Image 1 (spheres, rainbow, N blue to C red):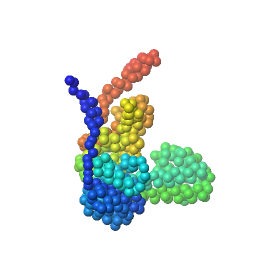
Image 2: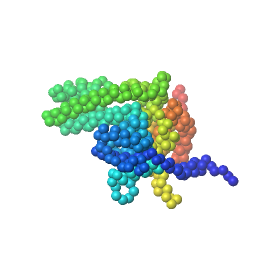
Image 3: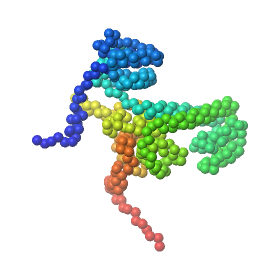
Image 4: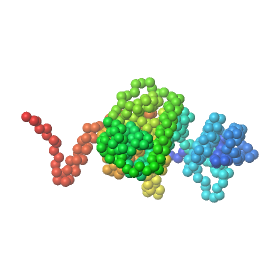
Amino acid sequence: MSKPTAHARKKNKRATAVTPTVRTDAAGVDLGATMHFVAVPPERDPQPVRSFSTFTEDLHALADWLVACKITTVAMEATGVYWVPLFQILEARGLEVCLVNAGHVKHVPGRKTDVQDCQWLQYLHSVGLLHASFRPPAAVCAVRSLVRHRESLVRAGCEHLQRMQKSLDQMNLHLHHVISDITGETGLAILAAILKGERDGAVLARLRNYRCKASEATIAKALRGDWREEHLFTLGQSLAAWRYHQELVTACEVQMKRQMAALTTQTEAELPKPTKRHTQPDEPMRRELFVKFGVDLTSADSVSIQTALTFLSEVGTDVSKFPSADHFASWLGLCPNQKISGGRELGRAPRPVTNRLATALRMAAQSLHRTDSALGDWFRRMRAKLGTPGAINASAHKLARVLYAMVKHRRPFDAARLGDPDKQRQRRENALRKHAKALGFALQPLQTVAVS
């Protein structure tokens, strides 16, 4: 009798049903903006379902009641931000809090009330049918709040930048069309002079920085327009608002670095030398990320400082909560979600997961199409096979696995593990020869001609 193959053993392992664990010490909470409904096992209290207000004093009373009922684990839905205060109070009391996806605990058909919801949550949790959502440690959550707040500040600043461009368009000033960034040294100097009353395009063009690619004549021509008072007013307010948001971003980054100092230091080794992708202003943050991760994540192809910072804020420096890279990719929603019924495959599209790290990895994957590396070559092959959207998702999946391995094993990025460059070159050469032969041509290597 032949032994089952490794693939068959893996498939059988996945198909094995997991017996639910009965937990008699479980409670369920249905969250609301002004009222929480809590259910405990009927034998723990004569009134097993109670309601509590969302005031802090009432939340402590809720925790006292659960402790009195000898409850050790509580299930609640991730409803907006209503769960945060109660989660923190229950966690401080030593209770195990199971934060579950609201879509996984839909009520059975019939009447739906707050009382029935909390009882349904308590029942599902008591028989072990709920899986807790991933939540990083408190120190990482503090950094995550600041990183997300910084992102909202940057987004708000960009809105004011767009209003500045709108005001320039309404005055038919094409400054933002001839220089790449109106918030750079040249753009800010010209805008400040305009708001002070200067209208001569030639005078304004002299404020051009020597590194600006546009000539003074081009800038002077772009600054001839219709100087309307109302548009100058909106331009000034938008510029002031943009500067204010930049100050807020700077203050947020200072506080963010203070919170990052509370994270465990993984290494004191010397930071690897920067590459062409790294800029001098990014070096302090790159150093901080290297110390906390124990490895330079930005050494991987297309992974920027912002991507590594998103990884830190959303996951942390410890990926042990994910048993394997497969689990990590599934949590990100980057792997195929195979659906089979009646022996027929119904679909393989990834789950519609909203994950900030997955979004950052997809953005990083988009830049691989112009990267001369093993990952870039793989992306281009996937794009020819799956199309651009499919290649972006597949490349983000591969980047997630690469970063997972780097963080888990504290191992630097090794491009050689992704493929032999010589074999990749030979593969491309064979493909070109095949296409040329199909078109009736024959490829020949270039001959170096010696110059006499």
